[in-house]
Length: 403
Image (cartoon, rainbow, N blue to C red):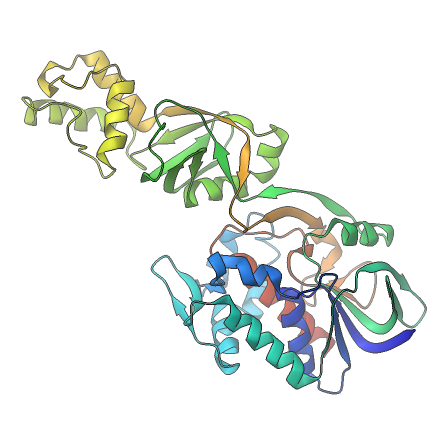
């Protein structure tokens, strides 16, 4: 059976819904349908941000915002000048959803529930008469002289314009490749590091502000580092995994990291601090209390790793022991063997090659009347609401171009 629409949006996720709603709002005459392969729509929105939905980030300057995107930094500058985080807040408020800013800049619905966002989208599609069709797995896309033909397992659709908002779906990438697009092969981004090391054994839950570097590369990042059952996580590590997605994939996730637990204090400065402590705290046991801003348990572990036993007093430290300690604090080497996916926030680096997209409209440069929104293209961000912001911005631009 043939079904005709003006616009078909492939993918019932955040980018797909936002695009469809904005198209219909800007031009109510257009007949719009969303095709979703699963039984339910907006599944990733439901589980994102621990079920609270991290809608965007309170970074309101386009040129600053782009710095959170390991892939897409250059390309997103123009789009963010058209639709940025401030516009996202305004859009949701206009649709009855108030957002709030948390201390780390992440923004959530005031309700603290992703269901608020889902309800907002579903209500808007109903009100605007957008067809939301589930269980429609796209099998082929075909371009005739005047329209697009989309075949699912059960239906055939015809439309004037098609929006691909199918996220990291390998099958859709294959279809696009067959139509002449280049796909940058996807690799995981945002993952935690598996590390077995006596220095962090039994310290899960301990966190410190640190800077981390991947040995023999230029890759580095800083931020809170969290010790877990299987190794290390936290914003600093996730940031490193995003920026290093390709490099670490090529290393097969076997590499060495160098951790500076004092963040921006280098070895020589650490030595000076330790020498002062040796004088000021002469009679006290070195391992008793952490002189730095991280927990005692972590400090004890470094003291032991430096060959200093738990009874040794500051006054009795040799120069070699002080150097060992400064080294453990600022240059600790850890061997990484493998990775773990970070919660449900599964993000991939890869997708439609950015050179083949016109970022003023998000239209394909290869196939007219074909548009892209969201993660299907080779754009991804670190954690904190940035991946959603890319979905809203690209969706808005597609809608403006189409409507």
